Length: 374
Image (cartoon, rainbow, N blue to C red; front, side, top):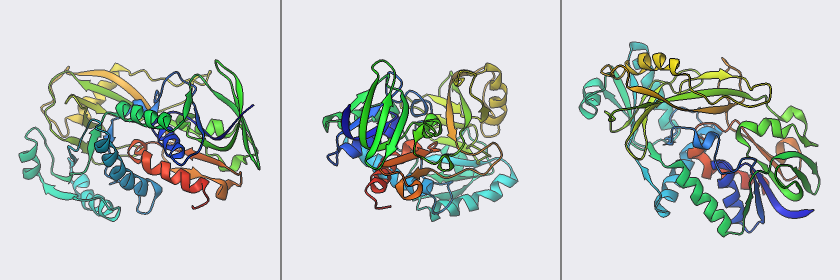
């Protein structure tokens, strides 16, 4: 049986950030990833936005980790020469009710420590973005975009430079938790057992299911998993905006927004489509072209000149929700020994957006939990 300091389960952005940070403390760390590459699920199927920290309840882990993580992420990208652009974002109100809600959103953002948030009228918004139609807007100058895969490759490289290793096609079947750490049973291409003093469950969509396979962990500390698909459509023509454009927030998501990639191409989404796993446990990532009709209606509220027939299905991502449809959004959960009583075990649940932005901050949180500091 192999013996190591720490096993990190999951090689998405958060798992890689945790593994890198742990390896940099001098721990011997192995990442176990059931897929054949890094970041194949949530981390590679999102908007690649560096979020400001606007929407989340004051004092929540989401708010703190997003704002702190944004600072850490910009500094990391700059220091490592990775592609990003601090392009800014407009949150637009297209009816009176949304306009009335903007001051509250701005107040929450300021309470969360978001810098530079500004309320602007329709004339100023249109001066900046001539194709935009709205009654009022919020401007977030610190919002940006990045190349998520380049970021994850950099995390992987630093992790490996500090002695870490990633085992691909290594699905964790179960964990036997005990006072001296856990015995991790790994299936896949090369079945093995690892004895790890610490186990970090950063399995994203599968984190709750994995946690239920940890012997010695009370199931009361494992939330129920729910899945919300977000479909994206790409714009086949040139992007008409230089900034990101978001409608006012809606239940379970941030509406059908316009984002830009590092090449300047526009994409729209995600919407919110609650789904259930198939009989074999798989999740459906296909994009139904018929949903495009709903996209046209939503986008034309803030871009009335959107031509017909210009949107094409792009891709879908799935949010790892820990609340049911219609329930209030839940905070990130970083559950450690101080909560569940299992030595050396940290579970991360519900790490949806802004998980990419918050990844470096969440990694620091995981280390502090393992070290008994929080």
